[in-house]
Length: 177
Length: 67
Image (tube, rainbow over all chains, first blue to last red):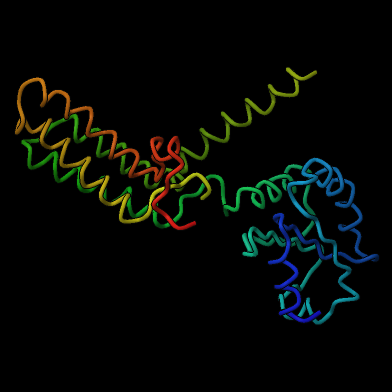
């Protein structure tokens, strides 16, 4: 399949698309297959899963620079959101499907526009605090705004948020059972 | 991101407006009851500008960004 044909196929799809490049002889692909099927059913009607036999599409693999399998591509409204190579577990696959639905690269990360707007707002507030006679409330607000611009890169925040998320994820199955 | 309904210019305008209102309130440039009001009302445009989502736009199904 040529790249143009491929792009048309992806763009014509009304649903977000997850593409898996696999092969019959690929062990990790076989290992991942049941999990992928489970998630496909979970997202039925929301995400289209296309499985491509890598052996039958060498040209496409070359153009898309797929050097190992399994490799998964995630598209939203025709745009490539992310790609990942190697076997994935159910949670990792679910994350990929969620990314396809949301059309966002990372749930935790900020995009550059958000970061710039927040940094500018924080700096503006700092300047405002200084020029209004060292107003404490504005300094605190500036600190909060500046932190909101870089929180996703703060190791302490990452540690705390992962602990909190992990705690609630552990509790959920207990509540369901 | 899907929830964002403000264009770049809209967000910048809101952030600037928010900072101006907060300065007017906290800097005691505007005094009295209205000054007190501005101290907290200024947060509204500042936060909606930072986040990129305006609830009023959401209710009225308006958006200033293209996508």
